Image 1 (tube, rainbow, N blue to C red):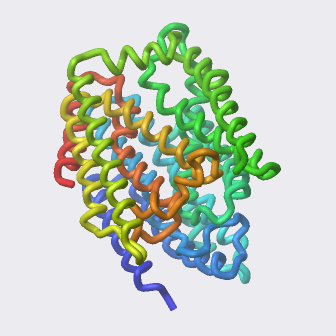
Image 2: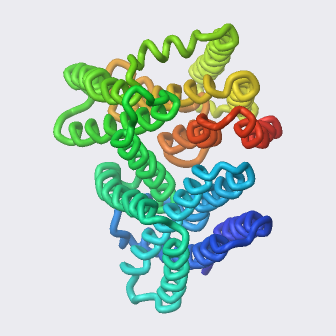
Image 3: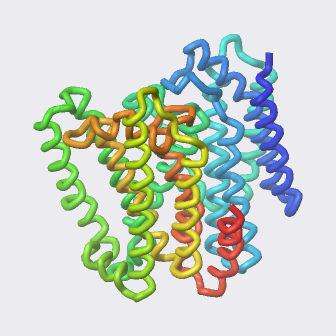
Length: 434
């Protein structure tokens, strides 16, 4: 029997897809519609495989696959970027949008082929739909992409396959197929961009804004992979492990990430960062304002912890309390969008790296704060009443806030001020509406 919430979710996704392509209908519209139809059928195959424990990778089986929504996020993002850049007359990023859309479609199709291939008995109708969708996508890519762009798409697909085998083995049952498609697909694309830009960087001309996010993401991923493998063979809850963890973090940061960033931008990254943060009076005011908001958020958590410890029964944070944090996020991002988007971009990347590092400390129980961060008191401050694994929810809260700023500011900072304002003004309006 079909799951009604899944059907409602699928209906909403189809409405969004058709709404986007109703504005402009071209060859990519046929690809997106074909991909959505086959993903709708394949996601039920994934659901059955997860329930029966027959999936090749160790996906999380507690939820449905979520393949249809995840399959459409990156293609729609790329198509939207293509159309907006085309209307603004920016050819380079119009081509970049086509590459993003093609990459998203091909990676989503790859996950669908895996599900069809391991389902027994072989689902004939779904195989036909997947074959038709694949033929349409490959035919469109053949007539739309240059040879170098095809190679770039295949590179991302190859990185995605390797990351899937590594991360899903080291972190079993942490992702559904849809979550793996979004998270690992995004990391694969970022890693490919960083490798390509590192090889093609012009001596003395690297813009720090182009490389800061890429290097930060690759750095935290390498850090997580290294310690995940290491703590398979040793206990992570000892003081020796804590000392080794912090020493290796410093070695990776100062011995690998900083020299890599220095080679790309041809200047000291720390000095550049300090100069950037305190360059204008407006930035100083924004930093002081954000520090006040961070202190306010910590105050809410401490108050919740004190309230919880003073009561005999288990305390659950109310919905109103959790909305305080939503208000703090909006109050954080709106002034940055209005007064200094570049500072907001750099601050978002730094906060993302810091939060992921703290999540490593919590996940591996690194002394002295690892066990404290794992305690119910800390989790109850924000996430009580929220369904799902704590790590997953923390990452979602961070990524939801960072996504639009990282995508638009990180990729478009080379444009003229007129084009940036033209393309980012609708995003600022959406922040204000939320």
